[in-house]
Amino acid sequence: MEKLFIIKIGGNVIDSKESMDSFLEKFAAVPGKKILVHGGGKVATTIGKQLGIQPNYINGRRITDEATIDLVTMVYGGLINKKLVASLQSLNCNAVGLTGADANIIPAVKRPVLEIDYGFVGDINATELGIDNLELLISGSMVPVIAPLTHDGKGQMLNTNADTVASVIAVALSKKYVVRLIYCFEKKGVLENVADENSVINLMNKEKYQQLVSDKKLADGILPKIDNAFDAINNGVKEVLIGDADDLLENCSVSVKGTLFK
Amino acid sequence: MEKLFIIKIGGNVIDSKESMDSFLEKFAAVPGKKILVHGGGKVATTIGKQLGIQPNYINGRRITDEATIDLVTMVYGGLINKKLVASLQSLNCNAVGLTGADANIIPAVKRPVLEIDYGFVGDINATELGIDNLELLISGSMVPVIAPLTHDGKGQMLNTNADTVASVIAVALSKKYVVRLIYCFEKKGVLENVADENSVINLMNKEKYQQLVSDKKLADGILPKIDNAFDAINNGVKEVLIGDADDLLENCSVSVKGTLFK
Image 1 (tube, rainbow over the protein chains, first blue to last red):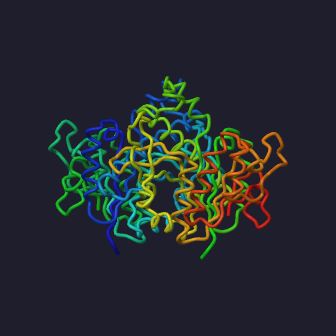
Image 2: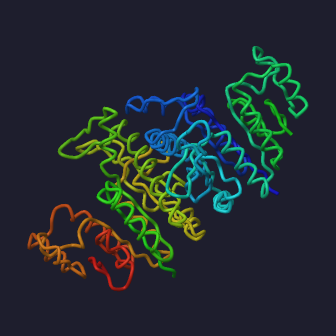
C-alpha cells in the first residue's frame, strides 16, 4: 500500500500569517500523497463579535446555535479554507478545499440532546464516509484541504472538532493507504514535564500513557488529542504523531522529533 | 460525446429560501452529468454592512477592495456554496463545492489597472483552466457547484462574474462533452417586448440580436448575459439557453421554454 500523510493544524498556525506561510511551505514540500485538516482560529470569534453573535456557553461548553453554524460555515469553509487552498496552489500544491458536505465525505448526526443541547454539532457517521470520492481526488493527485465541518444529510451543516475529523478520516483511509496521522500543535510533542520543552516523549504507548495519567503529568489540553491518537492507532492507522508545526518535515521522515504513537 | 448541463443561477434564486429550495429540487432531478455555477446574492451586502465594509464605487462600478474580497470569499465560497452543497446532498445529488482556486480549476489575473482600479477582480486565464481535475470529478459522478471566485496563482483569491465563469467553463468542457449552458434568471427568456412576459424569443441568432439592438428592444441588464451566450456559442458550446429558474426541467429537455441560442 502507498503512504499517505494526514496532517492537522490548529488555530495557533492559522491565526498568524507568518506561522501559516512557514507551515504551508513545509506542507507543500511533504512528498507523496497528503491531506490537510485545519481547525478554526480566532478569526471566527473576531468576525462573530463584529456581527453581534454572542458566544453562548452552557457549563463551560460553547454551544453552536444557528448564527454560529452559519458563521463557522462562512469562516472555516470559506475564508480560511480558500486562503489555505490559494496559498498552496501558489506553492504548486494542487489543493482542493472541502467540508464534510462536499462529495458527502463526512456525514454526521446532530449530537443528541442529553443534559446539554450543544446545537449544530456533528458526531461523525464513521461507517458512511464518502471515502471513494476522497480517494478519487487523492489518486488524481489532488490534495484535499478539509475544514472541520460535517453535514447531517438533510441539508444542515454541522460543526465538528478538527482533531476528530482528522482521526476518523485517517482510520477510514488506513484500509487503502499506510497512513501517518500528524497532529501539529505549538509544542515539540507530548512533554514528560510540561515546563520543559526538551522533555518530549518520543514513543507513546498505552502503558506509558496510563503511567503519565496516574502521575498527573499531562496538561488538560493534550488529553483529547491523545484520545484521538489512540483511537486512530487502535483502528488501523499505522502511525500517529503529535508534534510542532515547525517540525513538519522531520515528522514526515523516519527520524521524527515529536511524539510517535505506534 | 456525452451530454453535460452547465446551469447558472443568480442572486434572485439565492436570496429567497423558497425559490432556492424549489430550484434545487429541479436541479437535483436534471438527468445525467451537470454543473451548477452560482452568483452572490444580497446576503454578502447584508453581512458586509454588519461588518462595516462600505461598498466602494468608482464611476458606478463596485470596487473589490481587500475587505470585500475576504467578504465574498467567505460568503460566496463558504456560506452560500456550502448551503447549496448540503441541500443538494439531502436530495441525493452528489454535490462538491468549489471555487476557482480549488484544484486550480479557474486561474485568473487581477484585472489590469487602466482608467479604473477594480481591485481584486479576476479576468480568467481561459487557456489554463484545470479542466482535467474538473472532468475527473464529473466522470466520478460528482456534481461541481462553483462559486464566482477565481485566484491569481500567487495566493490571492479574486472576484469574477458568475455568468462569465459559466461561459468559460462551458467552452472548455465543450471539447469533451456536448454542452448545454443554461442561464437561469427571473424572466421566461429574452423578451421581444420587455413589458410582455409572453413575448419570449424562442430562437436567438446574430441577425435577430442585431435587429433587437437596432430597434432598442433589449433591457440593459440582459446585454452582458447575451454577450456571454454568444461567446459560448461562438467557441464550441452546442447550445446556450436563457430562461426562468422555474422552467429548469423544461429547459433541460427538447421542448424548451426559454430563449435558445444556437
